[in-house]
Length: 453
Image (cartoon, rainbow, N blue to C red; front, top):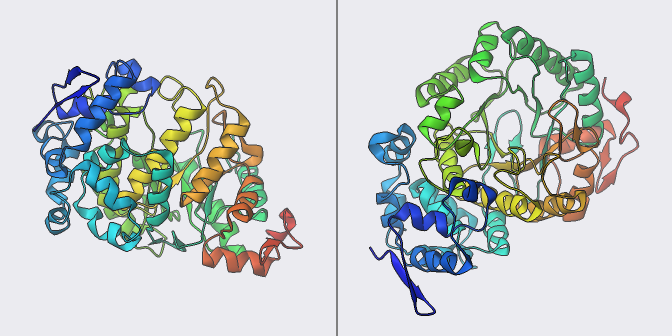
């Protein structure tokens, strides 16, 4: 395996595949913080030249965290589909990029090889792609999943209604949820980030949301994003639970910092199949974000894009209904400005879709990042065109509990009209019956919370 290249008469040598992957990455403040980024643009080009000539087989044989040290590496390797892998193993990363972009390579073809791809393969080809490339392939990748409704069909753009409340006041949560539904938001999930991480509070919120959805015949899913162990206790209390949530990262050590393991997630998945209230077969919800492993010093010297891809490798074990990259939430230490946040969003969406996941994105930024509202709105359009499965939605795009900027209830119908997309078929029919949305525009009850009883 050749780990050197010459640019303008200067020879660049790299010590490992992990170093090549890191130095081929576009500029990221998190990689600078970790000390793994390229010294300059020329070294970045040299690393990309090496990466382009590396085979997918070589990437499989050189995971950034060794098999014997990491249960996530073992999970990906042991579950890889050998038949799908053999179809692409001989390709160089450069040729794999060309194959993905080829007009004759369809979404169905990419879906067929997805079980044979390791996260390092997805991350590797991602680093050779422009933003247009990422959008082009992302738009071709269709991943269709089902819980109480059907997500990911062509021509659809869904949203999570996020009616957070700083004190978990149930009446406040329900009021915000009713507003979101009145604007056509929430077909992916009604998902609440709780302020108090207890089984009793989780059960109380889920029960209240469930009652409103059933009373209105609303075809969607609900979830309270407490820790997975808390949700398991709430489920044992007998509350309804359509989706079970957990934040995941790309290494065993980072997941330990989250208080989880593969064994625990297996138990949660089994419990949801036995006691969850969704029709299924997809019952899990995962959130990720570039930089999460570095924040707990659990990145093993690897770059944040590759570690993020590994989180998707773990997620696909559980056939989730939702996977969401909270792209600008972790902070400017990892993605410091609008261009870096936008690039990361397109990277994450592409890698997740390529690995067979129904990828959504929280297009967002924290108040100490260097990003403008105009840049954030532009990112939402890019994601909509790129085939992003769903975005967040919350009152005026300003989360009063988590204190960050995201997508507003008003943004979702605006974006759907702009990119000519609709919500899930079940939810679309419900909006029409309620008079909230008719055809291609707002109905007589659009924005009227009284339409939601």
